[in-house]
Image 1 (cartoon, rainbow, N blue to C red):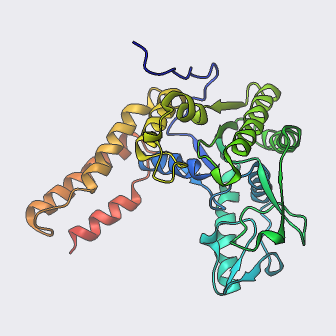
Image 2 (image 1 turned 90 degrees about the vertical axis):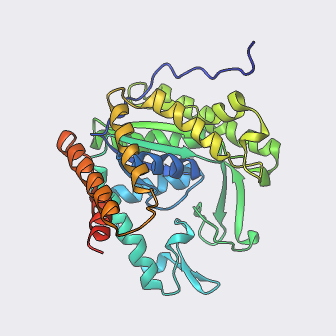
Length: 329
């Protein structure tokens, strides 16, 4: 008996290894997958602008990362007691303009420095609806709760997205011939737009992704996160209480498919060993600081050192520092 319609794996798939360098930009899905990749010690830079939803804001962020041009005071605005960038998530905002600029530019410098060495760029589009600032004509990445009257809202066309990304990706591939791009449409439902408008928006993104695969058949892949949730799971029990975001179980399910379809086979045993270390680190001792606890921590440090000896590209610096602090208490 078949209880659901399975989503077929893509005919062309990436083969991501621990040695590869990754950058992820886009919606909450990029943040979720990026966080899980980081836990199992893939080298990845996740959302250097914070969460971005529409393709044009993501491409604008990438172009700025490529140029490395710092943001200046004139590119920020003050609203409700904080200084904001229209291109950045609220995590970068601050009561003092210089503080916000330092956060923004420090993160930009980091991303710019990593760009040339990238092997994979994972981009997650959330919506084709954009907000253009009436004063500047700029498509913003974040409205920062300003009045809707400050913006013109419109839906991007497939041609507009494809034209923008053909230009962007052509430049990126010319700079870095080994770079590969994985496109994903976020399964998060933008119900505020209305369900019909949300479906039209997702359709624009899906068609644009297909055309970019056709334009760059050896460089661009598509991972069907949207289809997995909407078609394969297809049940409200796989959504959070807001009925828009995937539940924890759904995120786990999509992550499993991502590892099955996009991660190299030889990376999976390494992932399992890294997960075992992370699980051990979450252990809550009965008597913190006891000799038994210290021996337990020493075993974790030894395990990390053994893994680094086998796989020099793994980075356990943060975890080793935590263990050493606890051992010296």
